[in-house]
Image 1 (cartoon, rainbow, N blue to C red):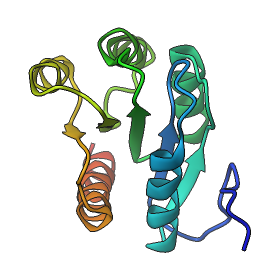
Image 2: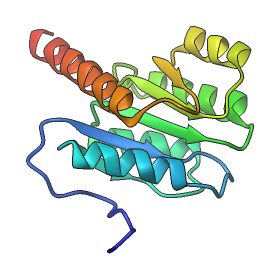
Image 3: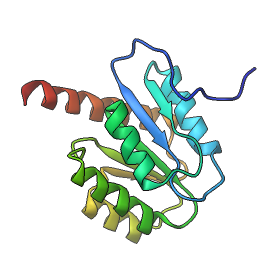
Image 4: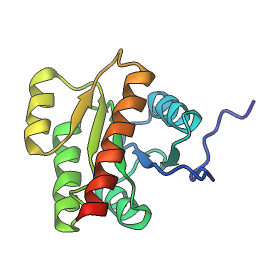
Length: 149
């Protein structure tokens, strides 16, 4: 069984998600599990791989026009990297894309990230079913807003 997740999943799915690993964190098992679960649920997944800079993640969002951006971070640099991503997305008029953050993020930091624009912070123990349902809900809401707007 091939355990690798292709960069771009060929799919007729109407929901497109980017899964990104910002910073120097070399642990991507959780991101790969989420990417596979989303793909298996019929969602198109673009996995950017390890060691992505905020600028590369923003460029991927500009190029791929995802319905949701999922960030996975375990390094402890979430209060540095995620705000840079959010600011860059605002500068590029990409702030209509919901951002989910997952990993080891303390509650106080999670609250701060939500105040800065992260839609939701998902910690250890969050089920893939919960994540899939949240991604679908956010994507459908964004798609409706784009159609109406």
